[in-house]
Structure formats: structure tokens, C-alpha cells
Image (cartoon, rainbow, N blue to C red; front, side, top):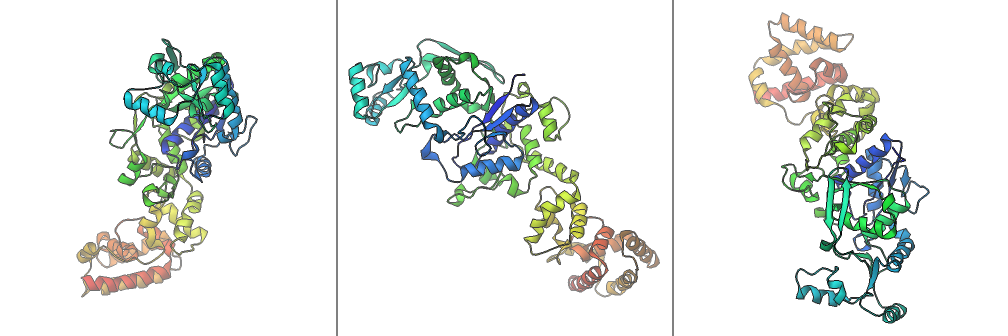
Length: 506
């Protein structure tokens, strides 16, 4: 395949929705598969919607996800600048070319005049019919147009959409798509403030940056008709990129497009990273802060619209790139199944080394005021990694490895413990354990088994006392492994404390 050049072109208007991550991922995978170039371009032509910090957020999110551009804003390259607000003069020149070659025109209509037109006709749009009676360079004399321009009168430049044509797109996902030009409006290309609209900037930048494929969300499909007309107007149709419009990401129930508010409403992340807005309603928890491994999020998002056609579900980034093809992207909306995302995360945690997990889990444990040794922490995550789904679960489910439990399983203790006799039965076990010269899991197990047999008890009489006494719960890793990690002195202290608590509820 030719030298692939693709771009991810988000607007810095706030937190990057998870759908943006999917768009970036699919572009990245196509470039990676063919040794091409993945570009980050910041589309900030609408300065009224610009949000400080959003650009940095986008770049940080891409780094975290491992979807790192090879060219673009903050990454360098030969086709910059890569922030559209820094390219204003370029767009101005191309907008003027549209007027010069007859595919664009100056429109001097005031907001009040356009409002009046809309009030007179609620179906009004600026198009091949209405332009003939409006205030523009197609209806005014050349002298009057020049006089207005010389005087500094405000204007916009509009695309002159041709009448009675079919605009055809061969979309890589959707196949043949046709638009009738008579149904299109004469969109503004250059705004009154001298900034381009998305349409002009998008096409000019894609052309100048030699973009070969445009992979973007389904919501941009209607705009593509105008983009094709722009390529024609500039004489660039032969070098037009190939288009692929991705299916919608649907709500977890499959009804309607997933929105940022769904995250708040359902308590699920729909952004890669958390975003702190000006108020709680505009603040959102991200996949990272919710405790997801970025590799799991990427794996999950890859399947939001694409399928390799095999039974394989767990892919490294390299494997995704090798298997990826735009033709395997579906047309139908993809349901955002957060439980599937959690499953992916669980698989990645279980497959991770103790060394990797310890690095991730250490800040979580230290935030609770504990400073475990590296050896202790690695043993802890090794015991817990098959019992967690998200990274915070290591603390939520395993806090007893670091501090005394606050509550315990009283129902089990009421069945297994008698205040008037159980302490006398189990105290000898603590003494036997204290006498062990080597307090490892095998030695502890042999000691407990010997005590159980000698006392005429069953394992079901002894293990619940040890487990609840040490951790407060019947859940968790193997008791003897936990005891070996906690150590002889700590186990004795915990069990003596537990015996006092057990006497109080029995």
C-alpha cells in the first residue's frame, strides 16, 4: 500500500470522549500496519469553544493509551504548524482562491438579515435558490463588492455549491454514498473573524499534509459531501483521501449514542483520563483513574466497531496492528459494554508480572499511609491479582494485608466459635505456630494439619477461625500463603486480637 498518512484531529473543547480514543486508535493501527505516519492535528478554529488545558489533556491521553503520534502538535514534523489557529493565513489565501475560481463568493448578509430570512421561511437555508436574492458578490456589482471590501465591511466567504449534481463517495466502511447537491447549503468557508470553518481548514490541511485516509466518526459523513466539492473546486479530486466513517458508540443498553452524561448517570468512565471542570456537572472520571490498564482499554476500544473475524480477544498493540483492516469495521453501532471492559482489565492484570503490578499498586497503598517493602508488595499483588478487576480493588479487597480489619464476618464466627471454650482449644495452635523455626507456607500448613488431627477437629472447624481472625473475611488468597507473608509475630498479634473480638459476639 502507498505511504499511509493519517491524522487524528480533535478539537480542544474539553475532555476527550472515549470515541475520540477509538478514532485515534484506528488511525494509529492503519499507519502502524503499513509503516505509515500517524499525525496529531489540533482543530481549534472555533475559538468560542476553546477550553484551556484541553490540548494538553489530549496529548497526555494519547501517551497514556500508547497511541503516540509520529508527527504533529508537540511531536514535530515537516508539515506544521499542526495547530489550526497557527495556520490562519494559509486558509485565508485558499478561501480567496475559491472566490477567484468561481467556486466561492463573498456574502455580506448581516445577522439581522439572515434572522429575517429564517423568520420568513422556517426551512430557509443559504443555497442555490436563496443566494440569488441575498446580499452577496453574486448579486452585487463588482464595483459595489470592491467598495465594501475596501471599506472593511464584514463578510464571510461561502462555498458555491453547484446545482443539480450527485456527489458520490466510496466509503471504506459504508460503501457507495450519494448526496444530491440541491439538498446542500452554501456553507461558510471563512468566517467574519478571518478564521476558517472546520470544512475549509479540514480539506486544506488534509491536502497540504498529504493525508491518504480520513478515518473519523459517523457524524462527519454528511459533511463529506461539502469536502468532496471542495476537493473538486481546488482541482484536487485525483489526490482526494479515502474516507472511512466509523459506527456510533452506543449507550450500554444499546439505545442511542453514548454521551459524556451517561458516564455520570451510570457511574462508568467514558473518558480516557479524569477531567476536572468548572463545576461537578462538568467533571468526569477517566478510565485511568477508575483503575484500568491502558492496554485493556485499548483492547476493549478496538472491538468497539471492529472485529478480526477470529476467536481471539486479547491482543497486544502489535497484534492489533497486524490484524487490523478498515474493511472489517462494521456499519452498525457498537454497544459500550462496561462489563466487557472490566473483563479485559481483569485479563491484563492476571497476565501482568508482580514487578509490573507492584509499580502500579504502590501509589494506591501509599495513599493509605503504608510503605511496604518491595518484596512484601510483590508477594501481595501476586496473591491478589486473580481476585481483582480494577487496580483500586487491590486495596479495597486486600487492605487487611496492611492494617487490622474494622469489621469481620460475625455470622461465620457465631457458627464456629464458642466464648466458653474455643479460646482454650485454639490457643495451643498459636503456641505451636510460634514454635516453628521456619515460618513458610508449607511449614504452617503442616503445623495446622497436625493440630487439627490431634484435636479431633476438621479443617472446616479451624480454617475459618484463622481466615476471619487474620483478615475479617472468608474471602481471599490461601490462608497459609497469607500467614507466611504476614509473618509469625503479626499472625500471633492478629489472632489474639481476634479471639477477644470473637468472644464478644459468641
